Length: 552
Ligand SMILES: [Zn+2]
Image (cartoon, rainbow, N blue to C red; front, side, top):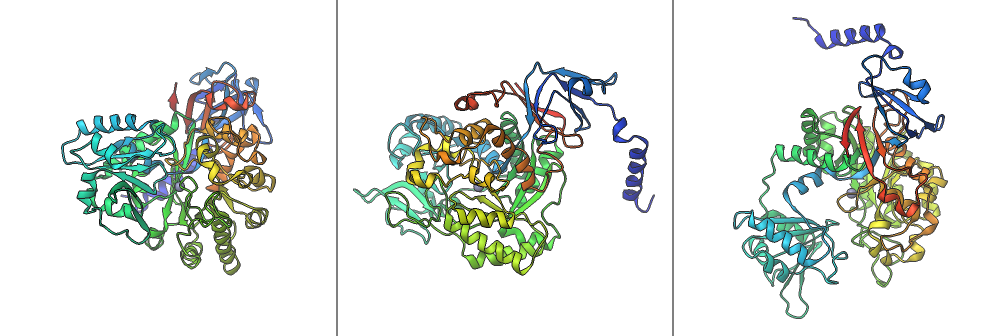
């Protein structure tokens, strides 16, 4: 028995590397005759890429790369198709969403009757008395012109308790049996920070509960998810992301359970995207005590930033703004954590070497968060802390200047203008020119990222490109045209900027020798496409770490 096998293995691998330097390595695979957008400014276009052991060996012309092939090298002629680096979704909730897709009814439907049919079908397969749960319901997207109510749910599912979550996650809709199980009746008072809605005419429960009132329902729902369920969730969402060209995602509100699910899915060969797993501030003490900090892990599963939350949501109109919501003169939105709380958690994490990502949507929320970051750097300057502003939706010139000075990274919603157009009117035309402000960020040299916030937003990268380039919604209404960017810029935002946001710009985000082989093959060239049809460009193949994770 050796005393230190780990060290012996290490020395052995060093010897192997010396015997077979990278230059001598032969490619396992060569993709050629492609229109390659490398996102590498030294060599922006190429035709071929050689891949070995999950990494890129060479990128260049067909002539330069094809001759590197050996007897065992596979060659794929892409017939002139466009090849890009894989997309990086820098703010999403895939592990959480995966479990929801596994267990819940997807209520992203366009009428209340369609929703009732989906719930009825699930109830038929569920033992009586057990919960029927749904998610991704959006009151602004059904043709009925009114929100779901308790009678709709009772009519569809009388014998099972039902809870349907709103797409934004802050509200939910329940049937009578669900309220009965949670001990809520017509007379139950609103909890602090929450609301149980009533029909104004009858005073009876309307079915909707908001914010902290949701916790009363949550307590009544048995928590039966196992470690295996969480792994299965990652497996399921992996396939969904791969299909759209995503090869990396930042889990923006991660927990130790998510971190474990990622490790389990990776060990089982089921993880198809690289995960940068944020850790919610509630767990930061135990993580620091265990000696963990941002960056621990490997190329597939890595500990991300600590997550803090400053203010409310854009899609549910609770972000904290300096001027009131359009048509609601006294409504400025809400602050979720105080500046003191943000500072005290932030200080702990900052001193322990963690990156910090704070949810900040409204201009007041962003100002507050920047003040905390500026103070942390003033009191304890750290080299390259890469503070993140999660969402960073409503900005002004002064905020942009401070973001640039601090070297902070905003992760604005990429698909909201296109997908949530019907909600834009609450912000007003003038304010929309300062929202999801990619033009302002890029002009100031700020590396803002692509970010879906799925489930609240859609994660399809081609939708992100179209939304960012056209600023038009599904119906063609344009919102905030001053913030339009070019397709070329949108590709950088969706690739190398996302890599920078997780300190991995030397590992991925562009196609260059030495980086991981994460890429996507498209049916048409986005740089030649009419901007209003970018979303229709088919994804033909996705590769992560040299392995095809999706093939059409
Ligand atoms: Zn989020």
